[in-house]
Image 1: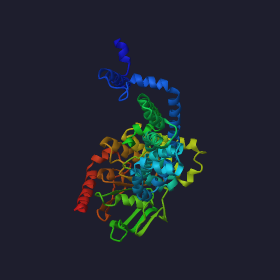
Image 2: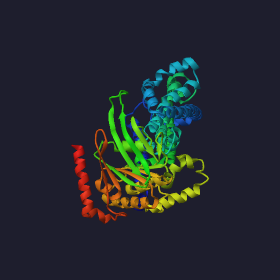
Image 3: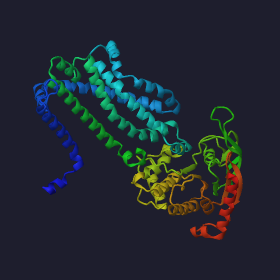
Image 4: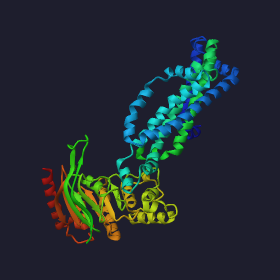
Length: 259
Length: 263
């Protein structure tokens, strides 16, 4: 028994224990304090609702996943290009930085009505909200990675006759990759928030929309089932991004550049 | 003897506000380095030693006067120069060997044929690594090497394209005393073997006296040459020479001038 336990990594096990513990406590609390199912449904009720509405939940989850990934994909493409543009030259960086901060300061929920005005209800505003909310960290990180090249690195290459493009390709872009992949973890979470946000305001499909419908029908366990579905999707996407980050830019964590 | 580097009455002003009242980095600098010579430039911090490096390698242009290298006025980057700094600035995503070969991907002479001659370049990089005592470390990433090893690798990178001029900006300043002396000997041997002209910027007087044929003492704000001193200790110098009275005398003499320059 002791030997078996010794082989299990305590750190690897800890998140599972904490998660299972939380749900166990939740279930227990619902019974002990006799909490009404329409206030806070117990995990077992939520599980039942998940099973009961399984196909619809699955369909709407796929819809949300699709809008999130579309917005996120657009954010990667636009963020990378805009980041390279802004980070290309210190003057461009200085010129656009305040604008970027200002843009990011706008609560994106305030933009959703405008998007609905322009594109009507449906998946378009959801994709666009996901895009708008998630491209900012990508731009800032890529631009920062490019704009902070060590002056000596630049000197060595410039003295050899390197042009701006050489410096960017040989040093700037590889150097900004850890920043880029780190920003993807943040961006995917934000994209997810954006698409669900838009779905709850103006959509006819997706988990956000389903939550709104369930709430209107007083299907409280289903509302919570939707929340859990969102949490699982969020964790999965984050984990995938973290895995990609580790695979591609592991060197950054072992070299001093990670600081 | 052929004059390899020549600075004639060079002044450089950094106009930070765009007016003519900016800081004067160097003023009326006159300096000549012969081909194949090993020259050291010493001085208190802020005396424009690094500015001198940038002027000679064509990264910065004088506001007044003229800089010429290898008989030609400097009008742009000087690719016949190799550079090494206090910070080895190895790129962490490239293996040590690929870091060393980076200049070959840049200099006009090699970049077009880089892929074609890759095997020859790899051989060259490995030979250089061996000459600095890093045989077999080419496949390691720079962050797997110690500070001294990284600095050796950065010397290899400075030398990979067979430069006629080696510019060293305090390359040993961040190393411990033993590693530093080891690297002095490596530089000494490489200089004898390859015969490139070397300019070493440093604030370590012992380092300057041990390595250089001639030493320039610079004064601070604005930088100018205060003293030119030949080091007449015969070469090649053994590290034991650093404990000889002659050596000590030269160091003491230079130190006196530096104190003067700081006052």
